[in-house]
Image (tube, rainbow, N blue to C red):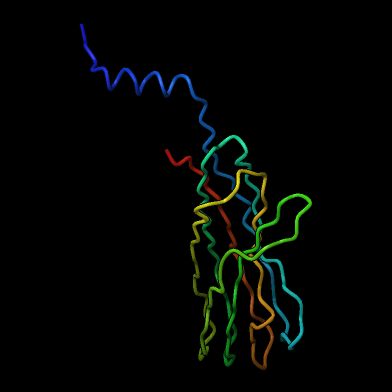
Length: 161
């Protein structure tokens, strides 16, 4: 016969009496490109998005992870600035992270991986969509042919006890 301590019994009761809704939502891997020369004044370009519902969590924290492959032709200077924007139904989008910068002078055609993470530690419980945008202050010099592929954006929400 096994015996459990009062503390273990209380924890088991807590787990059994509360519904936990930790969720991970992933957008399908996608890609954009080739990206033409970006001139000053272009608008944000949406690269990826993911939606997550934290309404059943009382004190959520949301971890966003973005990964992609950036393929560039020979002889270009690349400076890509990514920002994270959060949208909630009927509210104005708000930037919550970034810029995250990929910068390189390419001397030979190559593909390089790029990733970043952002933790939104005090979000309100809501049904939110997070977007990764290519910022207007990005620069792709001279030639076209830059492509962003194998894009994945994940969101993981956890309850803080």
